[in-house]
Every structure is written in structure tokens, then in C-alpha cells.
Image (cartoon, rainbow over all chains, first blue to last red; front, side):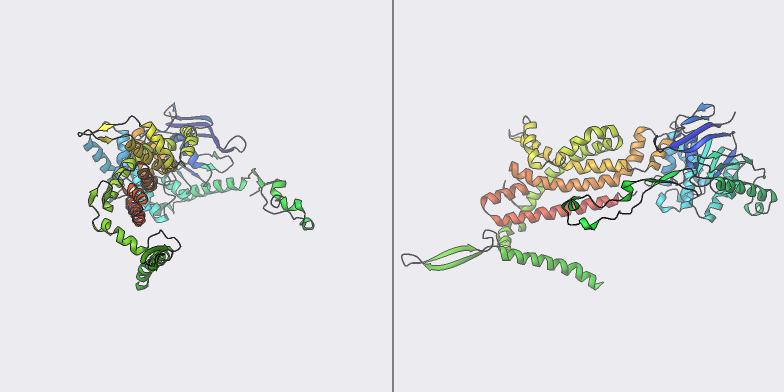
Length: 306
Length: 291
């Protein structure tokens, strides 16, 4: 049985009048121990998808199941790594992780907890910075702390929402390698969301494109049968990697090309209607409201074609 | 660098000098004249003249205030003490009232920030009560606490209705900036932090103490600082109404006694203490600006 299962899940924002559906009939299943990466354009609803699985938001239609049970809210069985790290700035690295450990393992003794925390700080190679505050760390180090916090919860599933997109390319590469190495040791179920096709193919067992139709849907999944550990230098010359990358990028680009926004937008014209100055000395002219604007008179609807 | 020092020192001095000069110009001059009266005798007459004849000049103010400044902690009588002795009395009352204001205001602000329903229910009342002057609250305080009377060992009233009313007035006037800023601060806690609390499944108490309170602290301290300023404003009005010893009580007594120079001493003292309090609070505030 799949660990995570989404059936025809849809989610939209806004109230009835200007409702905008972000995800439409999303079907997804992730098996236990699988590393699945979802690739999509920014703004195509990736974060919404993660929030649905994490339980931070509720699907409008369809169902989201975790281990057979419908997801009702966030829980310690699915830990989440946020795009913007979301570390609490008034707590040190150790304290930030301790907050998670205290919440998940309340019955542990102090020594067990601190040993557990130290283990995960060492795993992300931050032992030297254990007592620093997030503001004293670089972006990459902050994201390491965030990953350590998520791992320390010993959740069955790890959700990562664009964990590396805020980092520079070189830091991103080292963190990809580090996380990939940690995963090979632990073999947890991972759902990783990204906007970088290379990152997806380097890490994943299976890549699923999130097609930027409006509303977005998931495309056919692409299995990545490259053996691990994958060396980022060697893999660049691997013909299988090249053809997978071409397939993925073409799929995403084609979908973007076909995309045609049906959103019609009301145009607000700021121009002022001319006034008849022949009447300027008229008493009524003096008492008139401010100059009339065209957008008060008439609203024009036009269709935007990208 | 030297230019900066000059500006920092010289320009304020020029400002003070100009104000002193204006004061000297509008203050009354005392003239002694020798005149012949109707009987042909020479008498000396003192006449006050000037734009504001009763306003003492800077020099007179200094002479009259000197004993209060030179011996700032002297206690010659209940209502005749050194200026800092009065200040201490006022400050202790302010601190008690301010403490009550924070104890009530902070939780109230948190409730307002957390619950939209509570905000909707309380907002009209708060908006109406907020602009009410301390002078208006004081009589209500007297009525509310008319039965309060705590005796000390000697059979004197140690804490009576007027003391309770004074604390009530300070607390209820000084509370609002704390309430408002705390509420705004709680509402401004980034959704990211709330999401962390949700994903980690923190308990309500833990969410409050580990996430909401630290994230709100900078706002709370801005509120605390504004509240302290108001508490110090209110103390003068309260002391004038009760006549209890303190800076405001002394000011009012000296007005009634006609020694106008000491009024000016009181005003300057109130201003300086207010400035010192504000600076102290902003020091504390900047320490807590971690977020």
C-alpha cells in the first residue's frame, strides 16, 4: 500500500466570485522508502501541494491519505523542510532542534534527547555551530539546520518544499550531495519539490512533472534508473541522464507553450475625462466632484494571451 | 569629526540660550523706586512690570530652587522635601501603577491579537475608553475603591481610597499602548513561525512561550515604553488631585503658595525624568530586538 495517496485532490483560493483553482484532480501515490521529486515552474502550485500533504491546508475536493488514513492536520509522522528555513531566530541551532525533539519524544530523558540532537547536528556537519543563532549562519547552514530538525523528528516521511532554491548554485550542489548521502543511509520516504530538473534527476527514484496548466495537474512520472551513488560530474556525460533530462525539460517546456491563460482581467484606466472649461465660471462646475475618470464610467474586459 | 562635536554641543547650547533669552524678555522685572507720597515723604515702592509680570526670571528661578536642588534628598516636612525625594515618591507610585498596567495590558493584548471574535467584541469599548483623560478616571477610581482602607500599626491609613484610585488611574491610562502594540505584534507573527509550531505539533503553552511571545517581544517593548511615558504624564495630574507628596503635589502646592519659580523647577524635573525613563526603556527595548 502506498504511504501517501492523493486521489483527485483539488485546491483553489479566493472566494466564490474570483475563485482561482490552483490544483486540479491531482493523483499521486508514493511508496514507502521511495525518493520522489516533483518538478514544476515557480508559481504553479508546488507549495500548495506540499501543504496539502503536510496537512497545513485542506483539499477542496478529493482525498489525501497518509498510510491509509485521511490527513486531518499536520503531524509528527510527516516532517517538513520549509523553503525559507523557518528557524526561530531567538533560539540557537540546538534549541531549534530541541523544540522538535521535545515535541515528538516527550518521554525521553534529558540525556537521550541531547544525544539525539547532537547526532543530527553532526549528520548535517554543523557541530561547530551548535550554539550559534540562525542570524549568525549562512543560508546553506540555516537550511542544514532545517533539514536536521526535520530528520530529528524520525518521521516516516520527509517533505521538502524547494529546500535549496534560495541558495547559490555551489552551496546547492554540496547540499544535494550531502542530503543524498544521508538518504542512502536512512532510506526514508522523501517527497522533494523543486524547480530544477537537474536536481530532480540527480536525487530521485522517480520524477513527476507538475504541468503548468491552469489549474496545474501532475504529468506522467519518469523513473530514474541511474545507480547510486550518482556522481554529479560523471552523470553529466551519461547518455541515459542526458536523454532523461531532455525528456523532462521538453515535457515542461511543451506544457508551458500550450498553456493559455483564460483569465480575463478588468482594465483600470487611470485617464481623466476632459472637462468643458466653457462652464468653468458656473456655480455647478465649482461644486462638482473631482474630475471624472474613465474607469468610474466604464469597465473594459480584455482577455490576456501570453 | 571636530565639526560633528561642535554641532553636537554648540547647537543645543545655542537653543537653550535662545529660550533663556526669550524667557528673560517676557519675565517680569522688579523695580524699586523712590517716590514722594502725598505727604511729601520719600517711600520705596517695588513694582512688577513686563510682558508677564508674575513670571519669575531665570535668575530668580535659580535662587528660589537652589535649596531643593542642592539638597535633593532633604526632608524638611511632608510637603517640603528635596526635588529628588519628591521624584522618588512619584516614581514609586508610577512603577506600581505601571506594573498593574503591564500585568493587565499584556494578556489583554495577546487575547486581542489571537482571537478575532474577542477583538470584535472588545474593540468598541477599547476605542471609547482609550482617549479618556486621567482627570476623568480619578473620581471614578475614588468611587470604585471607596471602601478600601488598610491601616498600619500606628492606626494611620497606610493605603486608602485615594491611593487605590491613583493606582487605578495610572494603570488604566497607561495600559492602552501596551494593549494595542501587543495585539498588533501577535497579529504580525509571520505565518512561517505558526506553521513551524503546527508541523512540530507544539502544545498550546509551548506555542505561546516558544513562538508567539518571543516573536511579539519587540512590539511589546515598544508598547511598554509608550506606556511608561503615559504613566509619568498621569502621575502629575493624579498628585495634583490627591495632594499627596510627590512632584505633581509639590507643583500644585507651590502654585497655591504663590512661589511660581518652583513650578518651573518641577516642570523641568518632570521633563528630565521623563526623558531618562524613555532612554532607559529604549535601551531595554533594543536589547530585545532579536527577531
